[in-house]
Amino acid sequence: MLGGIELVPSVFLAAFASYTLHGSSLTIATAIALANALQAAVGAYVLKLCRFDPLLRRMRDIAALGFVALTASAIVPTLVMGTYYLQATYAGGRTPSFSWTSYWGGDIWALLIIAPLIIRWLAKPLYRRTPSQHFETILVFVVLVVCNYVVFWRVIPAISGVSVIFVLFAPFFWIALRFSSRFVTLALALTSLMAYIATRVVEPAATAVTQTLGERLFQVELFIIFMAVIFYILESIANERRYAIEALKVQVRQLESALRRISSEDLAKTEFISVLAHELRNPLAPIMSGLELLQIKGTSAVESHGIVQMMTERVAAIRRLLDDLLDVARISQKKLVLKKELVDLRGVIERSYASINELTIQKTHRSELTLPADPVYIEGDLVRLEQIFVNVMKNAVKYTQLGGTVAIAVGQSGNVATVSVKDNGIGIESDMLEKIFEPFVQAYSTKVEHGGSGLGIGLSLTKRLVEIHGGTITARSAGPGKGSEFIISLPALHIVSQMRQEPNSVQASTSKKRPAKVLVVDDNVPAAEGIERLLSHTGYTTDTAFNGVDAIARVKTFKPDVILLDIGLPDMSGYEVARTLRSADNYSGRLVALTGFGQSEDKSRAFDAGFDGHLVKPVSIKDIEAAIAL
Ligand code: ADP
Image (cartoon, rainbow, N blue to C red; front, side, top):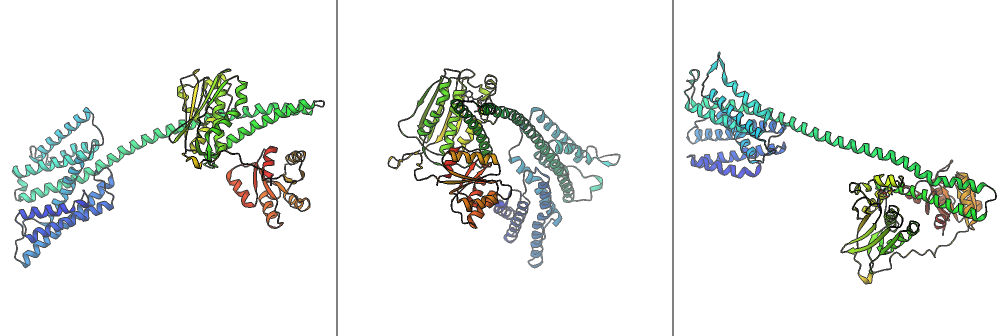
């Protein structure tokens, strides 16, 4: 039963062999063997239903075992005694020398003592024992043997008329509370054996002389069955408690480490907010002073141009910062979608390299670019790939003292394309090599030397972008002052030469033409007027509206080719305006949404409402022109 259904055929054969060899008739032997097989099958099935674990580690296993031992074990005695009875009645066979109860008791005993003993001792021990535990095990079994001897050989028959049988509880409690169920099965088997021998060899007590040997053995058997039930239960309770304590300890450790992580992340975020404020203030300060300068009358056209140029660069810096922050949020919410295409990595690297050129010259670095002669094809998002390499190259330039060297090399081995960006700059402490890829983390030396410039999100964003391209990024450095190397590996594609197409060919926009009339709709009056002014300066005919109703009315009179429509309007949403224009007014011109929300679901909502394009504020004239082209 404990070993499972697959042992049933063995049970049948063993029972059949045993009874045949014992001199039973073929009918009796077959009937008994069938009964045994049936009992084993029923027991094994019930135990399987209870999801019984034969290692007896849980209270429920003990309950299942106890239940099956008491019920299923009645099948064999009932069938066998029935067969004997029928045979004796109708065929004149002999009646058996044992009773139904003693047969049943024997089966219970076998199920509670012998089967668990075999199964438990064949299983691997869960724990290794220390020498002191070995000593304790030997000691408790010596005590058990002595107690068994005192009780069953009746060395001390009774104390003040009270049976000494209770002394056996002492070693059994000891074993159940301190040892695993293996030792409980061993103690029960040992006690059974000693009790059996004593019952056979020792003269019966005066009170029991009238009983037959069978009756006395049956009493001993019952006693051991009770002991088994009690101490298995006790052991499983102690065991469950041990497990619960272990599990609690593990959970406490996990909680502690989670708490440490949360507080360090919290600290990093607080630091991040102060750095962010600092980073935003940096470009804002020159914009403020630039604006004031522009307001002073008498600023020459050349000066104004310089100021405007400077302000444009600062605004672009703020925009980049906000884009990075948005990307981090998008990636962590798994909302970043790659526009994958076939790309020659060499082209991407060349463009990224060109974009850091100015910074390299400013810092008087010497830079090298090594590209393979053959194309290195990968599948990726051009914009995101450039973001990755510009980030890493910029860091190399930034974290290298004036007049340093930055070397960039592209290679391919098998299915892997690699890009190495190496500098001889300030280097990275070995314990920071992994951490710099975590968000908001900056190496200590950089913080000190570079006054905490940067936000510490560049590399974490880079790493995530590389990962969503199926690649990896690692940092190497021999230590502070010894330069660093960043290696980016990406899955490369093998393209058969005939299939090679010119990758990276920038999409020609020749098919597009400039619209004539543009309507700008935004409830933020200065913003609307700003865009309108920009557009009319660039040669478009423009008009403005500051709410939805007004916008719909203007469309009828002004008849624009393109509408730049803000989504958050006071009277109705931009989506509603778009739907009305498209359905009721049959507006067929271009509709471009202008919003502060750049999440992908905002875009899809806009397209559903009938928009053709989607711009995220702030926008430059270049962005607008690209979006409104027909
Ligand atoms: P940021 O540059 O804005 O601080 P990054 O995430 O790009 O943030 O970089 C994190 C940190 O990694 C930097 O602050 C710097 O300490 C370290 N680091 C990155 N690149 C290099 C490099 N090439 N050499 C030395 N340190 C670097």
